[in-house]
Each structure stands twice: as C-alpha cells, then as structure tokens.
Amino acid sequence: MGAKNKRTIAVEQAMQIVAEKLKEAVPDAFEGDGVAFMQSIYRDPSFPVELRLDAASKAARFERPALGAVMTKDVTPAPETPQTSDVSRRINELLGKARGEIAMGEPV
Image (cartoon, rainbow, N blue to C red; front, side, top):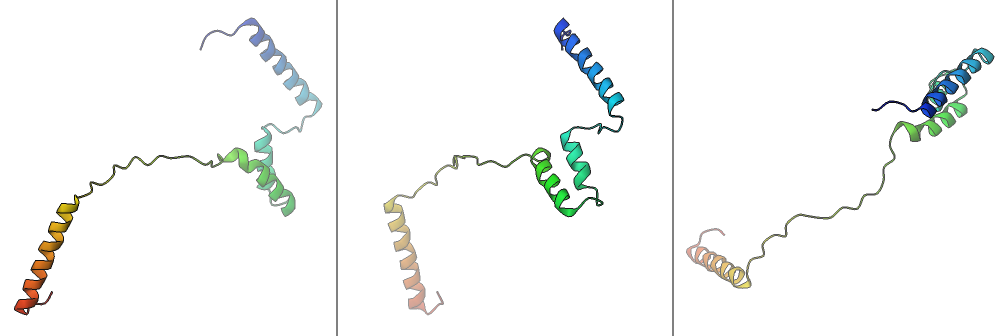
C-alpha cells in the first residue's frame, strides 16, 4: 500500500476530531458499528422478545451471506452407448444360455 495523499490524511484527521467531540458530547455512546449494536440488543435477555427478534432479523443479513441461485452446467461425459448389433448379440447369448440351462434342468 502506498503513501496516503494530503486529502486522505485531512479526512482521517477530521474524522478523528469528530469522533473525539462525539465522545465528549455523548460519553455513553455505543462504540461499535450498527451490526454490533443490533447483536448487543438481540443477545440481551433484559429486552422484550419482540425487540430482540426485530434486531436479530435486521442483523442476520449482515452476519451470514445470502444464498443465491446458481446456474450450473452438467459436464458429466455421456456414457458410451453400445451398438444395436452388440445389444442384440448379447441378448441372444443370454437367451441361448438360459434355454440350455432350462433344458438341462438347472435353475435359471
């Protein structure tokens, strides 16, 4: 990361001054961000359940990523299909084998 330019330095200094003035004006102000504030509310059992549920529902979208629909493409290779002549030949082999076993009295 490179050096900060003059404008960035000035903005950061101004933000620091405003933050210090806010602490002086409101000494009990919450230190965290909005999500942390909502979390502190929904985790505190001293608040009413309705308020805690509202805080939890509003904080939830920032705590966990939303699931989204994803389009996928099937890249499974197609199975090799046997030739019709191969299938016919195999069926005839099995039928012939079954006929021979039936003729000899063996179970199929």
